[in-house]
Image (cartoon, rainbow, N blue to C red):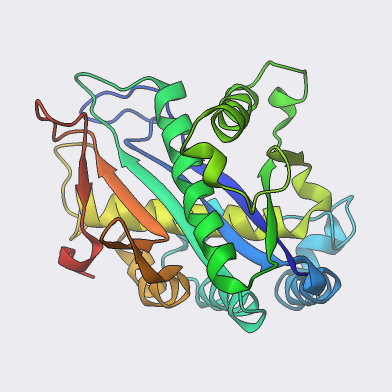
Length: 291
């Protein structure tokens, strides 16, 4: 039997925003991360710590944390101010390389938000987590006959008080879906309710933070400001994050089999700016997107 963990983190937020976008607002919300085999937990834990020490030894030594607890935050990988940093780019690619070396796969759901008629945060978060749970279950079914999995989410300090955080509310919703919904009950490879982990002691969540950030930035880039010059909307320039896109795509989960006539993709993007009578949002085809 093999046990896998789908480590997830968020980038952007589910709050409403203005147009032009104001400082601190995010027109995109992403929930994303990596599925890693827990048999390899010690190995990828050690490799990521060695990588952090290799690239950021001075910062770690000046901090009050040890190497495992010190975190490289994903927003550094996509921040426009770091566009020319080869060190950060190399570190980010090598982090993705650790996922690939251990046979891991990437999963994400992103929403391009509608500033005029915003979707509720609970709805977005719930939909994202449900989609990811379904894709992860398919991944496990295709991996082997005995593969099982758990979902591990980053737990922010604001969410530590029971019931206080949106992620806690959504996790309860997913548990209800898995146990009480006919379709949800088909997710038999998931072995526990979503778990919450402190990122400072959970390497998988630290890696998920980087993945979520660079997928967020690429969704932002591709959907809102492809050339980085769309200033009327107040959008940021994330053109430099294109350097990660091919690597991300090479690691995304793609089902081997068709389900309800379609192969399942680990990356999903929904554009809430495009609404119709038949749907609350429009799914964007990654195959039709310019890199």
